[in-house]
Image 1 (spheres, rainbow, N blue to C red):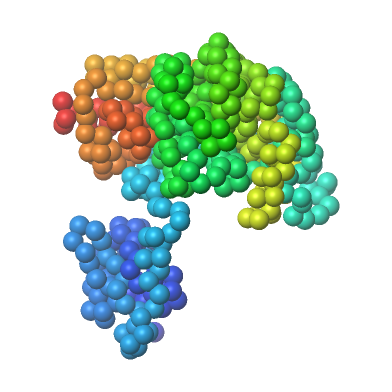
Image 2: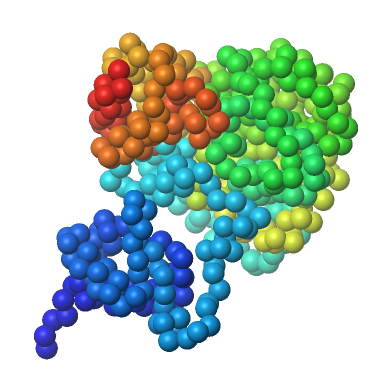
Length: 470
């Protein structure tokens, strides 16, 4: 039997994607490089296949943009046009991410790139032994896989309550809601508590500026981050509306700047927020990842009046794929949000919940943290050494005392979009500061994921790319 040419196989695959409705009219198909990598062929083979499908009227190229689906087999023989799903998504209530953020999200799954962007632990810090041991114990305890009551598995909430007591947060299991990561908690708050026309006071820069968390009906007021975290003086020059204003902040190892508020600053902030009746959402997902000394107590530990909703997560400390975090606050608020939760997805993975419960209860989580802190400290120090060696003449930075990131500030104005593209061309993914709403020439570099060798190669690439702008 005669072998079917590869370009013919690829053309048939493209047609099937279109005919099955997986690639709808108006959608952009993958790049030639991506298709070539998927099929293990040269790009010329892919070009031949695409030209064949173009000649059938199914595809059309747009200069500088890519190849788009313009027809399917049905639309070619029918006068009835199919739904324009591309137009539907364009005007949806949830807007698309900024283009650079979309690119970074896609690129972070590439194993062939140096990942200075990833906000997660490197593979060498994944707790393989601990997960295996905990899973063995958990499988013997499994009884049912029901939806639950929306609050989350009681045993896990009890262990989180005990865990929080160690940092001065005394809160009962019934005041804790299990969520699928910190962002899920924040999304529940925006949909379940905040009302139309609310004013959100938000740090700037902040990782929350890189996602569309808040509905368009809400006003965002940016409060700058200084060396000791949120600029409290500027915050309280603003006007607050009772029951329509809220403060979101990340006071410990802030993302992206890695700054932390002092204990004194935290006390001042909480006192003033109580005076102005300004609720606080405290995002504290990096707390357990201190590298030099434990950070000051969280705002929630100082809160005696239910002023603070406290958000934490195991995505940064164990594994992002577990999708387990929590929200702690007044019992009435937690019940309200658990009801909202039940209207959306009925709860987080039961298996992930009981697995994390076992890690906490057995003490394996704390032992794992000790190893992670040691490794992260080594990687942080190595990236600091490389920065001092290669970029000290063009940039400044501070030594982070925890978390994953070093915030690099360039001494002169740089074209950060150009730097991003140049680094990507050399297989290095960086996070330019503008995706966090920073208007200066800045860069967030992660030391958590890349290897020592990759960090050195990546810094040299950044140095070489900068030479074109200096």
